[in-house]
Image (cartoon, rainbow, N blue to C red; front, side, top):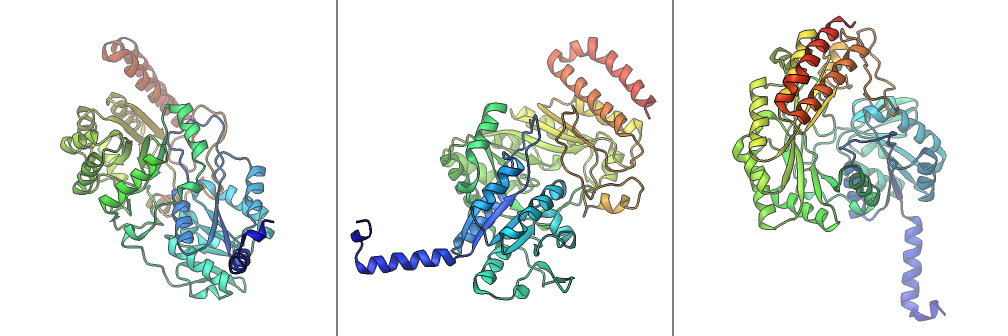
Length: 477
């Protein structure tokens, strides 16, 4: 009865489509991050890069699934991936995900025809993945994954695909370098329908009272901070047109999100670009709040005021230190005066302000750490984060200290324990992990005390605490 509703022509066409669908190369993209216990991060986002690759594959007619492990356990992730019966499995990996990437991929070795790894760490260390993976994609992945899929579909040799590494007779083979995509407007928007939007909305609604998702408006960063790695997007800044950015923001609003996180390394690098984006948001009357990351030397009062008008709620600064000498060691190319000025400019415009700092950087001493704590806790911040130095492979910091005894990065992953301060000291920077965690705890208590009791209350309660803990810090080993 069902088949009788089709004409002979339509029936044949249906059969042909079914055969083509069966023969089609199916690709499953995997984000192997598993949410830690008691997770309260304000930066818990779906895998934007895999969303871009999914769109590129779809544009070329491939069937794509995306498995984000964030809200799954290991068993659930394996079940979901196997359910799609992929011919190609593509994994994103970075510094903190190598262990879970390798473990999950090894479990799926017999479930696919080709295992592909990509992302920051595979780009930096492709040979470190070839014991498990068949191919490593180096750099931007949109064009590479499409070419790999075409080769698998047509039974072709992959040696002509640019930007990959694979093994022949147990020896690594590097193909020609893949150039960066210059016109970012040609890349289709990420396939957000493949994201676990429900779980991410539930997470943010429960934890913070709003929903948010990322957009990236540029690629590349022209600065050379000592601790920063940019292997995938490179050093040259490439920007999307303001019209293209705001069109994606409109799509995000229609998906029911209340806010956007602009995931650029520095959203405010080009003032003209930022102001044009703000103008378009206002012109199109988008009811969408947003947040971004800024350098302190690219923020001024006029820009902050316009950002506020266009719906910006909070701006984050990677200040990193409250000591000018340490900022020079970090190659930040800014100073404490600029940092203070930027924070006050944003606050004057009515924006909330967050800031990130590092304590225990190689070259620091007790005084510079206390300078940073004092500076950070005196700023009118709405969010304050301290971390330990992480020598990520590919950074100048890593190159400086990789031969120092005590450096341990090969199997590091994000802490998933129940500790109050979830940081791990990976190298010998002259301080014990215990001492640096004491500094972070002290700093957070000073910050919260000043925030909740005000300057008058802090002079009564906070100052004695500060003096005692300053002394205790210097006595710790």
